[in-house]
Image (cartoon, rainbow, N blue to C red):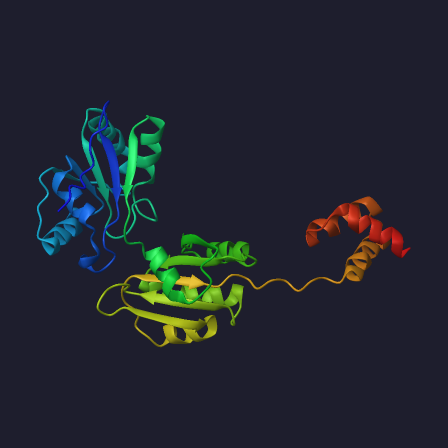
Length: 287
């Protein structure tokens, strides 16, 4: 097997972020296996989950294993960077998928860049991209929104901000909150918005349900959902082209209310996302 171990930089060590399998241990890359065996330090989100992965891969870590999670990453980052500055190779892994994507790792990368420490990546499995590819929804433009707020008001406010988002959206959600999340999506984005619920990706009971939000909500209301969940939602459909006469009429209505013509044109142009100059010319021509 080729040696894929990260080599230390001339003036110090380096940090390697490595993607781990999101369900099927056979998705572990040869590079990940080599890094686990040769890194001086392995920082893991959950050391118990790491040990399960090591057993599945039938390998051992010869370096030092440390925990690195949301509750200690602020205090542990400085310690790890000091080790890397001394020439150590640090491997950062999370429970599943890509470090720093809704998982620990961002603060470490941010601090490493600020300190001039080398950071690289051993890419691999990603729940975001896997769910997106299997959803059957457009993949040419998409955005990742992570977990929505738990409180209803905050969750609906966030979704209201995304109501006009044209790109496909990918979310994560806990199984026991899926029904509540889908209900909010249904209320804010509409019953007919196409979506997909991806469950237990790459695992034995992998399941991807596709359909309008109304159907997916009906399913969640009558099903005991388990496992890791990703929800993919289609972007907002293109708005119907506005009639230029309607925009001129909107300006006239504002003027009748006592608003200056210049201000009325600016307001309608901003709302319609068109040129103020062109709208003003149309208003003058209509008089």
